[in-house]
Image (tube, rainbow, N blue to C red; front, side, top):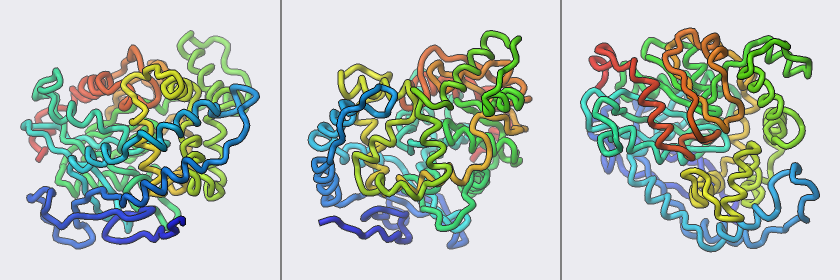
Length: 441
């Protein structure tokens, strides 16, 4: 019998079922002292009842399947999702990632009336640079778990002590273990302001910010807001499409005929990504942007949720299909990685709440935002589009780093963690000045 208890409880985060918090002081940072109760930082642990995992497997096995697709462009192939279901319903073990999460310092704090969950790992190295990293959709904090130790403990991963970061990885509102907004207004700009509050609350007088997918839009907005504490940003999905190009692509009109090769290629990639056909991006972006509440099926069916989360972009879906059907490697990604993220979304019942960010956003995805702070841009070859240097230089007037990476795609931190880490080290190197070190706790 299905458990319909989805009441959000405090002081724990919004959840599908039972999550637990541990008493203050057990596993937390003993040095954290907060005067205001509303600004309290509460240690957090993940602990889903076994009954919920049993129910998940039951639902997977009870899936009512449709017929096979008649064309490869129609969505997630039946063979892919059935291979995923076979593994998910039998051999997959959620407790492994739950243990890895609980080995990390996790916390909850309230910002603007909403519980925000975050991982906070401080480096042992003196003068480490504080960094906040933001995930995207259909992702979560799961995407960033592979970069935590290389960033905070660089000497164990081929780097030097001067490469160290203090790392904060929050779950965005409506995602994972963070609260689900009960009112409108949590758009990327609001999230950006909340992240500045979070970093200041943790005692960081200066910090840098990184993001991909929605995280890229959030850090762009932080760069527009330019709070004095923000030293700079790094993005692996640059908001750099010039207004004239964006207008032409949005209307279906022609782009300028005299574009350089790299700019013309970028236009072709964007056109491919946002038109009806092989790429699904426009489909889910429009649907969640207009009617996210209608997606009841992804809250009720784990396989419905899995298929929806897999269908992000054509290249990623092709790699994931090869991973599940043929066992072909997808960078550093494994079947468990993919299912860790999907299972987290299922157990926290955040399929619909995370979709509302598309409805909240009123700006463009890839357009120039007006970033005022120093910015670093990394371009991965299988990203939605490869931002040309010329566009990046105009979009980010204080561009401090630009690099075209040799391999990797949209989920760069997940798929190519070593390359991603090297880009963050290089991108923020020039911001590790005396002022930043003096203000770093």
